[in-house]
Image 1 (cartoon, rainbow, N blue to C red):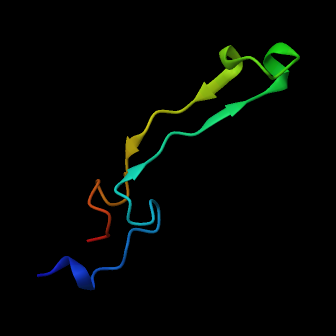
Image 2: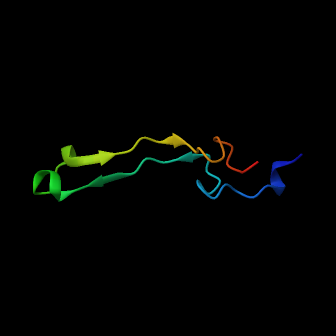
Length: 56
C-alpha cells in the first residue's frame, strides 16, 4: 500500500511533528519583554498519526 493515497493527518497537517509553541505573557513579570518570561512547549511527535504524517 502506498502512502500517496492516504489523507494527511489533520492534527499535524502531515508534518509528523507538532512544533512547540512559545509565548510571552505580561502577567508573569509585568513587562512581557524578558526572554525569561517566555513559556515554551516542546516539540512532540503527533499523537494522532504517531509521527507518520498521515492517518492509518
